[in-house]
Each structure stands twice: as structure tokens, then as C-alpha cells.
Length: 457
Figure 1 (cartoon, rainbow, N blue to C red):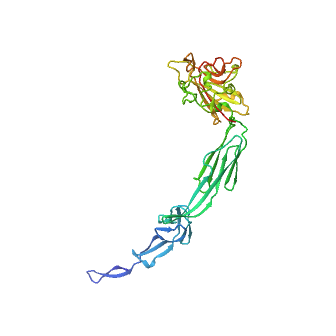
Figure 2 (figure 1 turned 180 degrees about the vertical axis):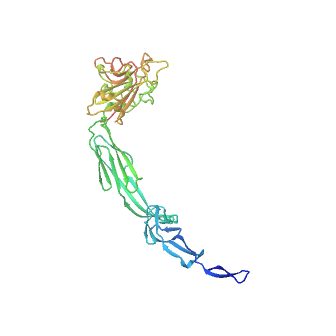
Figure 3 (figure 1 turned 90 degrees about the horizontal axis):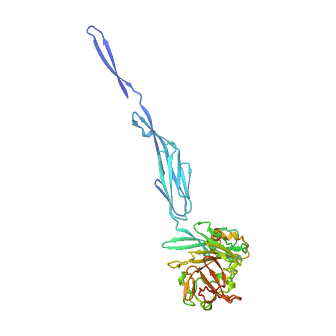
């Protein structure tokens, strides 16, 4: 390239002056400059798929810095300078995928898939120019092989131990089943035992595992009426959703088999002899003179004796249970704690008082000595109460001279025994003032019959 140079000469001869213009060419310097370009590509460039067995694949990275040369605004392609550029990567997604960088490749590895499809994203970018980037999707197919876990116990409900203590066994089946889908079928490849853990709560219970048999043991209950509770929890190590918890209960000392109170019928004999009523309403009880009452109990039942009634109704008038002005009263008789609760008002009313009754709750204490004041506490009755026995005694009044009086206010529950001194039959007397065994009336007064079950020793 050149430029034009104009030169002017003046020739002076004789006037006038003559100017001559001579032209010539002068070479120019080239204008040169560089332009920086960047390039990033990954092969493959969109998605990489893995089968469920896992394995590794290598991705080739092309990361370049290109210096393009221009001379006088004209690109000189044969003069490019290409330099490898540094790059980085990040991997996010399902567990099982890992990646490592080596020179200008990235090796992606994935473990064997034993569940559903797994996915991840490989993000590749230039270190100095992070806005040059690309993302590769990684997909591993779902496994046709899968595992089923099962936990089965030989006991499905709570374990109940008697007050005498002892041992109970639980057989534990804990399996891992290796399965595989083959078309529309599922094939069982292998079954093997899978680990499990056991957690036990409850101070009196101990455990011992031999193979798959778990033995739970508790000693004799030395606290009498007190129940002991606990839990046994069994869970699979590989599948915590497979967890079973069983309640453990050691009962308190039970009522002796010949204790009269639990043997009492739930309801009175109704107006029809030998037929129990099904209600505690006062007008549903039959009223019988004592000589008839001894024969009105259904087969297998009889009237209680004076001694049997004395288990829950003090046999000595001086030891009577005073309930006047009280809703609750308490008594310990023959190793048994009793709670007496008045329901309704023990008075004759108009209209007739049909729902008044006495509720008696009994708890056998066995040989455990307790302070009498303890049984007056609500908390004491609210706990350890699964062995308690409750009976309701309606207040149907008395039949005298062909007329019912004191309806809703009192009751005479006949026994089969008579006072040897007076010859009058004993009865359990309940009224608004007290509860005790009485023999102040002859047998001609009509009263209800509460039967007791006949027990063959």
C-alpha cells in the first residue's frame, strides 16, 4: 500500500512565474490487531445414559482460547493461535454418581442401581469465563432387580404376664427378598435373613435373643396390685418402615378364685325369678321375701352368705361405712380396697327416683401393706386399675305390706344366712347414711337378690 505525495516546483525564467506539480507514491504501515474467542464443548453434548448395572463413561471436553488475527480489518484465518483453556465442573443429583477430571476428559461413574431411575446433572464451565458453560444430563435406568423386606412376629398383640412372672417367646422372621422383573413376571432370586434391632422398655422385663427366638422374662410381681408395663420394639436395619411394637403388661396379683366380689352377678334378678335383668334402673329389680329370694337365682348361681357379703359390706354395725353427705367413701376389707360412690340422691322423690345406685369398685391388694389414706386418692384409683372389679347396686326400696316404700332411697340385699340369735336373715343394708350387714328385719320384707356364682373347687 502507498500514498500520493504532491510536490510543487517554481520555475522562474522570465515573468510570468510558472508553477509545476509533480506527484509520487510513498509506502504506508499495515494496521494489525487481535480478537480473543472462547470455545467449550462436551462430547456427548446432551445426555449420557447408563444401564442399571452401573459402570463408567468418559466425556471429552474441548475448552479453547482462540486468538484471531486481523490486518487492516481483514481476518487472517491461517494465523489463529489456539490455546487450551482451563475448565471446572460440578455434579448434582442422585447418590451413586461420581465424576473425576483428568486432562481434558471427565470420567463419570455410577454404581449399580437397585431401585428407581436415577438422574444427575454435570455442569461444565470455563474457569476464567464461567458464562461459557454447558450441562450434560446423566440418566441411569431403573433396576429390574429390587428388594422386598418383611418382618413377621409369632405374636400379633400385647404380651401379658401374670403376677407370678415367667417367660414368653417371640419368633422373629426378618427376611430380605431379592426380586427381578422379567417381562410381566417377577422372579424371586434369593431370600436371606436381614439384620434387625430390638429396643426394650420397662424395668421388670429382660430379653434374650438366641437365633431368631426372643425370650422375654419378668420376675414375680412383688408389688401386689401394681401393674408393670413396657414395650418391645423390633425394626429392620435396612428398612425402618418395617417396625413392630408390642405392649408388655405384667398383671397385679389377681383376686383369689373364691373371692366373693368378682363372683357377684352384674345385675339383680328381675321381677321374673331365675332371670337376671339387664338394667340397673331401680324399677327393673325384683323384690322378694328372703325365703323366696334363696330360690330365685338362675342355675349355677345362689344368694351369698353373710360371710361372703361381709367381704364388701362390713359385718359389724360398729364398722359401718358412713356415706351421709358424701359422694365417696373408702374401706379396706380382707386384703381388698373398696371405693363406694353414691350415684344420684338416695331419697324418695316425685317423680320416682329411678337412677340412684351405689357403685362399688374393688381392688385386690394381696399381701401388700398400704397406708389407708392412699386409697382415698383419685390418682391411686386411676392407675393400675385393669384388675379392678366394679359392681352397681340399684336402690329399689323394700316391699312391705304389699307396698313399695323408700324407692330410690334404700335397698336390702338378702343373704342366705340368718342371725343365730334373732333368727332374722342378714342383708346388705344400703341407705343415705351407711352401708353394713344388718339383721334387723325379718324375712317378710321384700328386697332385691344379687346372686353369686357357684364355684366348684
